[in-house]
Length: 476
Figure 1 (cartoon, rainbow, N blue to C red):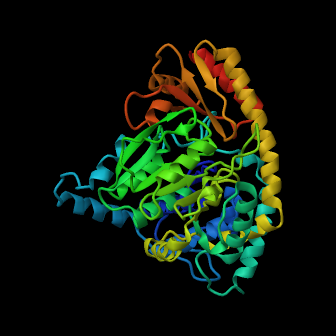
Figure 2: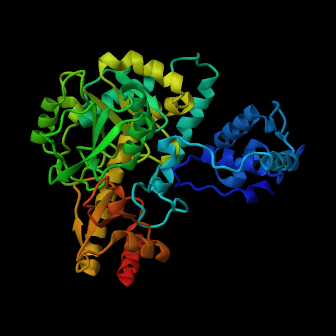
């Protein structure tokens, strides 16, 4: 039974379509699904795996395009590759090739040294940071939106890669909830927030350009800018977040998370935001504002986005739906200044960072019908309670070992280790015991490095949080 050979991680960073495609490709290439063998129908395999039929259909279509399957209309797909022959051929070829390591770019050669993405990605365990609770997502409502989008797909004309309905819905939502000032045509729909950073780097960064990022920071930002040849400098934080460095010349680009600094959760004050805007010369220094979990604010009214304060088109605003909805949706967005719209649209096509129009149309309906805001309101209450529950548990059971920084929002928090404890060793002990966390020092770009633990609370119910805290107490 083919479904027994497939294991999908619904909370993983890779979407279900990507996982299923990769695993089926491997089964065919290694001969476990032999040439000429018929696979189950998309309906049957979807039922066996507990996923939508569209997920299976997209995987079959991709493998057919790659030549692994014959997916003729009206019949079950058939494997077209002899895995045994392919493996043998590969082995024969390998014996005739120089065994020297392949030459990689300087950036790629350093990838294994990075702690991003985390090495322990699956399966999801408490208290891994960076995740919302997929179990609380209204999957039935979302499935109806997907079905209606699929039915209408045959009647839709081939349109722009950034669907108008979703851009308009997003423009309205961002204006009312985050104070973003933008027209619909300034919004680009992308496969992820990381894709937005990759696109920004490709368009704006030349080799040797200076880029400032927060220190500690979101590692994906530094990775995207370094890949374009930038000289990345980490700027230390104070209680208001990223500091402005008067002694340094203005860089080409500044990356920041002002509404909820990653990873510390600190909120940048209005005065500090204004200071950075004054410092950034229009057309010379760009600011990238990543509002990765700006939907979740608990203790006071959320501070409007930095982009809304910008009157000179200096700020590029990045967001994602993976935190507010589910990571499987694989959609992010980018708001670009008016002067850059045309260039970014062309670059988006050239690089191929294009999101599914089918998913875009379904999401536009999900937002327009009020389901998105209803879900957000519910999750804010839930995550607020989970944050407080984790803080109370850490202070009661581990107060002598760590001090907790309580964020005003977001889906994770930082607990700093006392008495000079090393966080990397602590993470290794906790992961071995079944509690997943991240070392704060691994997110730093320079020394001295702060030591602490980055703990997620949004994805875990209160009983799961309590059990995880008891495990942490036993480890310490």
